[in-house]
Length: 141
Image (cartoon, rainbow, N blue to C red; front, side, top):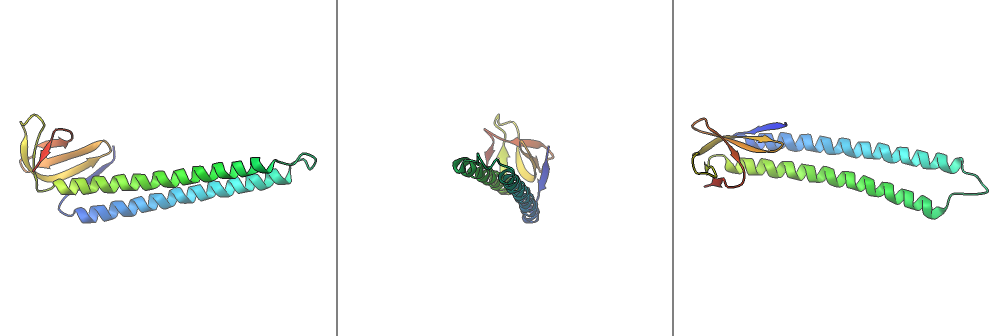
């Protein structure tokens, strides 16, 4: 489980997370470019070694290029969506700090002192030391 803790200095954590996400996005883009370069090398090798009496169909070649371009765009889109989801989670966590939360069953209530982000949700640490998962049915005031 990935864990990020957000306290009163949430801006610093958000900046760090955004920087990390930007590095991950750059790494994914770099890998996509390497794959694209590899694809182009393969395509050139295929063209050099094709039978001159039966050359590759140009529509087939264009279809290969279009397919690879689509895969590259999908990788970039996924990277951007992951970044957006992470920023949204950090904003939601920061918005809960200092607020009064009540569990879905109404048994646990308190002011949020600290929030921990997990890959599967948010857990608030209340001022009285109680941990409360933030999810459906939890009210924030």
